[in-house]
Amino acid sequence: MAIQPPQQVDGRLDKTIFSGSEIITKQVDTDRRLSLVSPWQKITTNKLTHTGWFMIDRFIGAFNPNLLFRYGEPNTSGFAVWTHGIFYLIDAVLILLGIVALLTKKKTHRAGILIILSIVVFSIPNLINTMSQWHLSNRYYLF
Image: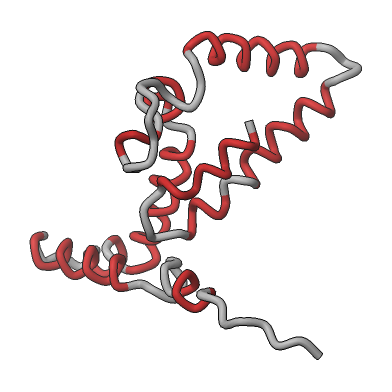
């Protein structure tokens, strides 16, 4: 039997929206404090709605054209040395042409849908993480 060294999984698990909800709690408290008192406040301003908006914001942020094609990770990472995005601007045109070509041909229609669904599914780790997004560049491999 081999003894493995301790791993830092606990530290990463505390940075998800399910276990480390301090960020969501602070947002809810701030919104309730700054808004007018109404009967709808408890329905519209709670942890569930803020978690949903947080996940939607992270999902849209994963496919942000400025991040992908213009600035890339130099905004958030001190290790990046390039001055353009993850992709070049010409790649945007080629990606769109490829998706259109896959979806319009009857033979490759299922493959196109599978690729689009996999892009959506592979962005799920980005939705539940509350830490900085720069280390999540593994989601770019899905492109």
